[in-house]
Image 1 (cartoon, rainbow, N blue to C red):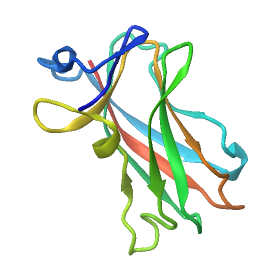
Image 2 (image 1 turned 135 degrees about the vertical axis):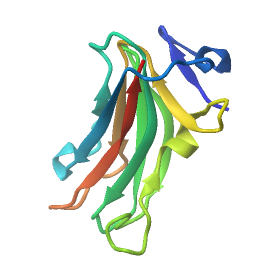
Image 3 (image 1 turned 120 degrees about the vertical axis):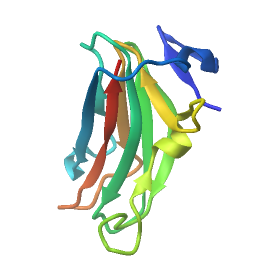
Image 4 (image 1 turned 180 degrees about the vertical axis):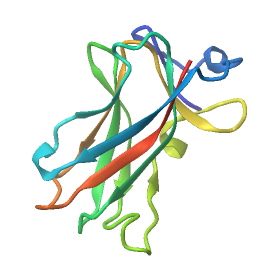
Amino acid sequence: MGVYFSAGSMSTDASIALGTPWPSFIGFIDKIILPADSTAVVDIYSNVSGSAPAQVDSLFVTTDNSADRLLSIWVHDGTASILIGTRTVPDLSGTNGTDLRVNLIAPLGMVQADGHSVIWLPVGYKLQASLDVALAADKKMYIYGRVNIF
């Protein structure tokens, strides 16, 4: 079950996502969280000035940090940031050859009719992230993914 964000409200009505046409544009998310970002909520994708809904259909995170961190994902509706979920990002995920990158879409997105999970961002909304504890000095967390614009 997923959560759909629409015009300042949340719904579990999947019908708003059914019958969606092919995207007219494909964009990318490429945010680097630094130690200086600390625990602040930072923007990772903005559809504030967009003219059509955005669909985040892939979202991954890797890190070279030497300790696990909790990464929270938020949707900002123009007024408030709404927490949609938090995932543990194990130390060295996706950077040490042993621990895989962390998939954020599968557990945090809404499941579409085709079985794939996505996060919808109406015009005026932003996708954001925050950490429970700042990263160690000289370490980074990389958040990347794909966005379809309709």
